[in-house]
Amino acid sequence: MEQPHTPRAGERLGRIILGAAFLLAVFAVVAQLRSDFSRSVARGAPVSVAVLTAPPVVLVYNSRDGKAELRPVRNETDPSATNARRAAAALEAAGIRVSGAQRIFYFRPQPELDRQTAWDNLKNWLNGWRSNPGLLPGFFGGYLAARANGNCNIPLFDFIAAALEATRLEVADFMINPSRVSAASAAPDTEPEVRAAPSGPLVLEVLNATGRKGAAALVTRYLRDMSDRGVQRLDVLRFDNYRSTEAKSRILDHSGRIEDIGRLARNMGLPSAEIVAEKRKISTSDATVILGADYLGVLDGWKQKEMLH
Image 1 (cartoon, helix red, strand yellow):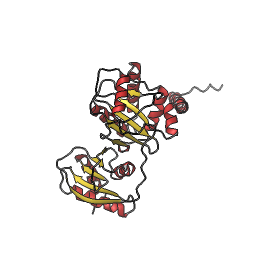
Image 2 (cartoon, rainbow, N blue to C red):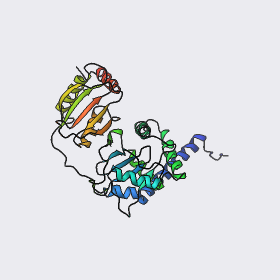
Image 3 (cartoon, one colour):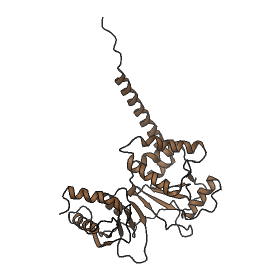
Image 4 (spheres, one colour):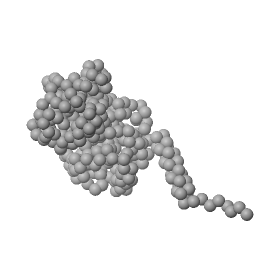
């Protein structure tokens, strides 16, 4: 007599994983439909969140170009105020005007973090979650802990929708803009600045802070070759040594061409480099690339692949 089929342990595990994936997909769809964040993204409106570190920073996500901006607050007037008051003051200091009917979102990390540590944690998550999915539970756990303690007022569906959007971003998609410190001349948050896309090549300065002689010249040659091959239109105006050795590479944006600069970072193998707004009254370049010691690994990889000759 034929015995009834009994599912093996592997089959049961597979069914559990498949069921969990299906439920997650359904939950994600519902989150997209019910989320104010998703509706803002759909109509191209920027979304702002006050991150209550010490001192705070305001994160502004613009769905029109898929870029995020970090606006550090220089000085916090009253760190002992309620989260809602701290968030409102942070947005005002960052140059964001909020209408009376508009809700102010805030997130206060648990445990308490200074601003640089919080940014470093976010960079590590952006850089590592694809190769280490184990980082995802910690990301959601931090939200749940803050929510349970009253240190976050972002609804669950909005957080899930924002997290799904964040999985598309890299560090190079974030701009650090310390120049926005006054609300007096800022445009309302519902009217983001839109810049016309320039047609000319991205004009660059390359500065060597790696500690290795000749790195800026090698990178300049590589960038000019990249432009000649049609990968990206670039014009390296000059290369030189930086005033000191730096551990991390970064790019200074003098022109606001954040999309082109983010593309440059990825083409250079620098998706984790910070992009910092540094407007100059007179500037002959669109951006300055500061090569830190972390770029030596990229240079060594080029040599191994004989990309430089």
